[in-house]
Amino acid sequence: MTRRMILIAGLILVLVAAFGIRAQQHSAPEVPADPRLEFLKQLDGAWFGSFEGEELGDQRYEFRVTAGGHAVEEREMVGTPMEMLTIYHLEEGGLFGTHYCVMGNRPRVKAAPKLVDNTLSFECDGIPGGAESHDDHHVHGWKMHLDDQGRLHYSAQLIEGGKVTHTPTVVLTRADS
Image (cartoon, rainbow, N blue to C red; front, side, top):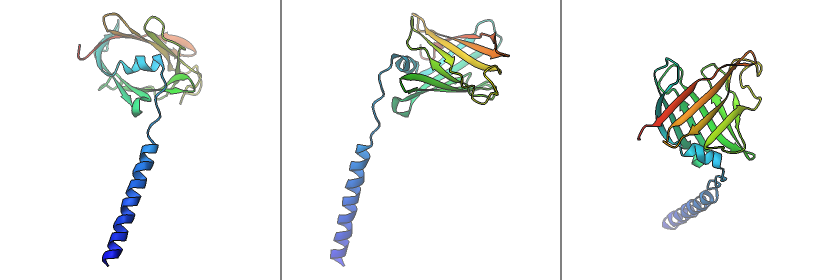
């Protein structure tokens, strides 16, 4: 019986070692270097502000780096009935986001090829996500500008009937500043 127990213990050790080696071989791939994704990553944390010319009160936005640095989660208007979610990721050399909107649709946006003057711009890539057509009411795109004082100017573009109907802008300050 003792010999059998030693064999079983030895087998267990071999299996544990094999699975450990296999787990190390499947470590996450490196995140490709992309200044646009790095721009989003630097926003990690909570931000507070209000919309210019709108009576929506103070707003909270949150950015969180997730998936081993491969994605950034953005939560807008946190804790309100208007709360929304956007997930950004790199795909085939482009930076994309899927915006889960309070309007019930989920437009997919693509970032401009590069940052310009510390501004990252996004525009719907033609996939309206849950809308019947690209002319339906949806958030078509937005710009994020980080100014020299560390404030984030976030301007969106809403489409309805195929035309821009509203361009709300919120100015946000990092919660810990």
